[in-house]
Image (cartoon, rainbow over all chains, first blue to last red; front, side, top):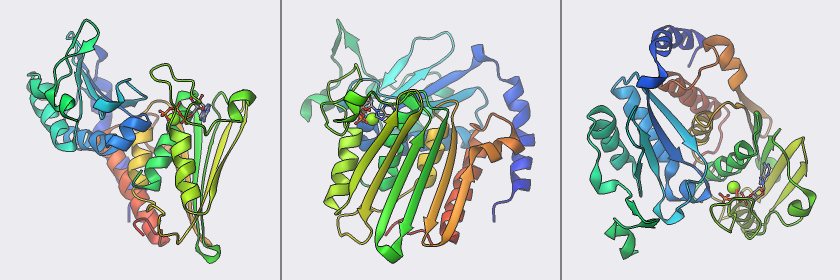
Length: 133
Length: 182
Ligand SMILES: Nc1ncnc2c1ncn2[C@@H]1O[C@H](COP(=O)(O)OP(=O)(O)OP(=O)(O)O)[C@@H](O)[C@H]1O
Ligand SMILES: [Mg+2]
């Protein structure tokens, strides 16, 4: 049985972290959750990210979800915003790809280029896996 | 969608877009009468009466990123396929109520699926409170983020807390024999 005591324990453990967290050091990971994203599998992606953040005990990371990011055929879409850096948009995510992004980009600071959406002159140019379908 | 819980997530997403602060979700497995009923009520900005009349038409949307709105029409199609239907009631400035009815044992009915994942995902969307009620005939499980906040404070978006919530909901639904995967 899950008990409220457990919850109180958890609170004690997370309180310090919440208090220490300062916005300018915080990385945001945002998952798009409109109909298209949900149908394409955004929920397991979001939960995999949460799970990885918990497993790695990452303190300065906020995971959030948002509505439609706009390009349905590229969903699930994940945005990573590290403090002081440009936003990086990852497309066609899976739970596995998302875990890799958390490890390599959020923790390691190295963008996982293979999954990134590139836009030039308002056109999405990168991704040949997109052309194929 | 492969799970009713994904439809719920999607409909609740409309509530969040409408600025709701409170969302009430109820899943009622009325097995005695062979009905699955899903209700989602919010206190968001509501729907204009001229949109409301055709709100389940895929070409009715207020979104600017594309011309079709799929959420309600998809859920309605799923209900109709299972000898049921979907209704949307709304009052501008007050909120919206979506009710979906499906024949419980219809062969095409999607499983209820991972409700806990849906609720945890919704918690991550911002400053909303979620009340959830699951009924199986006369047995009831209830969950309310406001109750959790009384113990842990307003910030319930920490991974460990969300994990606890997830397991609590899974356990609660199991205890009343919720037919999550059937
Ligand atoms: N709970 C709600 N509160 C206020 N307006 C709503 C609500 N639910 C739906 N609407 C209105 O109905 C329209 C259609 O909703 P629907 O979910 O079918 O499509 P969408 O949300 O526009 O797009 P999609 O679901 O494909 O991301 C919305 O654009 C919105 O204007
Ligand atoms: Mg919608």
